[in-house]
Length: 398
Image (cartoon, rainbow, N blue to C red; front, side, top):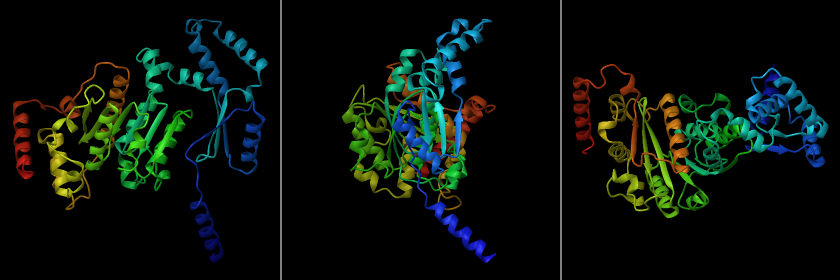
């Protein structure tokens, strides 16, 4: 039994030290060099699973390109003719691309990029038209902070947006994060940038994701902003939020930020692309500087966040929770549903802004409480919320 325990401990340690890339390798099997590389991966056991749904992908591609015959009796025969022609032109196993995901030990057969994007976004039509989809996909998006930011990234990519994405976060996934980040315990301890990049690549292996695992700092924020078309701020650090706005003003790009508020969302939009003189945080924090924000203590941070969100907008339970930080709870509470709402809302804003379409240029409150809680807008409930907000203002001297 002792030998088994020692062997198990040794083998677990060996597996713990294994490092996997968080970027897929895309093979073109028409090239002998790619065939050789993939064969070596198979020989050495790096590939444990192979997924080949290529025929069905071609069936969908044929349907997307020929919608007028999809519901006709001879669609199946026409597809068989089309597929036979593909086979005559090139062996199917060499067609398209094969994607190797190192962290999954899996090889997947997919369409080439343009066809892949066409099929993957086919059900977006005409909710998102062709021109809008292309602008959305070709944009470069930066996301700082990958708690709510993880939902933002996935919502953008799910809708066929942002081939180029930059991700910045210095934290690793913790168990307490899994109440609001769409992932599993298999990713515990992994850097959030790595985890999110892998999720993006699994949706779109043709994506180009650049990682900033040290988070955003004075030293690297200039590089982070290079080539960006828009930036999403989901960071907790108020001083770094200030740096983001300095860079957004310099590069004349919009900032979108969303905060969860109980079951609800507060979405802020700052259009430095329209007006570089837009006040930082829309002026809600008053006159602030990087130095001032970087020196705030826990209470000062809570006060400033409350000032920015607005005491009148903070839900009753969130107000109660903020006062219990460091007493009965570790940090401010956040819910998975609110993270998903924020992700969807920010993705909507990003798509509209990138396409030059009308969008709120200041703030929007998205409240499930208002829409679904009985009597939310009754005079009694409105007065109750006013009194609670007034008391909260006194506590924070606002």
